[in-house]
Length: 212
Image (cartoon, rainbow, N blue to C red; front, side, top):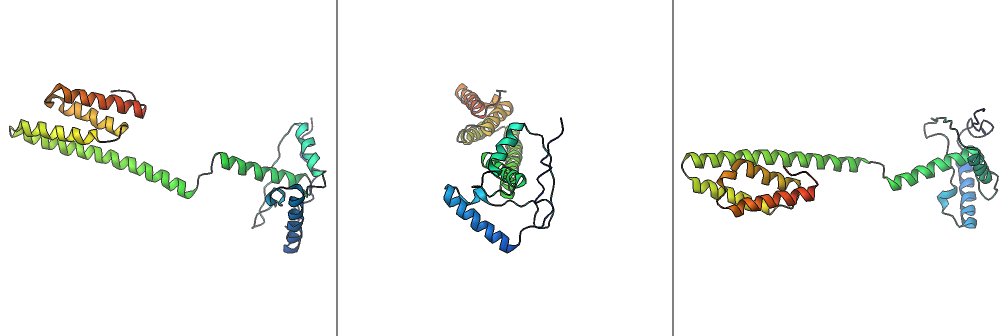
């Protein structure tokens, strides 16, 4: 089968963009049309085949015959100001992409910056976690070396109290697991250990992670 590429419709491919007077006349025509058909003005706007620097791209696609007939029903309808198949196809591409953007917004600079800020924030939390655990471990080790076991236990309990105030989620569970691993033997009562286990379980459920 020959490739039907709308070869017959080149009325606008090799011509210059309309001048301001032509654009003005066409805008009036579109405005009048939109009023008659009760459509928004942009529905009938001319979509140029070139950009401001006069650059253009040519695309070829295969389509089922029913789509060609469907398109032709609009180019042959004098109520629509499409100047041939190319004009209509460009409008369809423009409107189709706009609809896709509404379904899945195209990333912008601000959205990408926000994503980077979130990533950096997570990195900062991870760094803070490592630094805090290292500092606390050094302090608790120093207490134990000095024979101040009670002070070491009190510090662990204070850390647990602060962690318990965190919102349930990944980091709360990570802190609780680290406390249990590092200082589980210093727990003064079974109740404290049970509280840690509960924090780990609930946080894992909220974060959707596996228990460790």
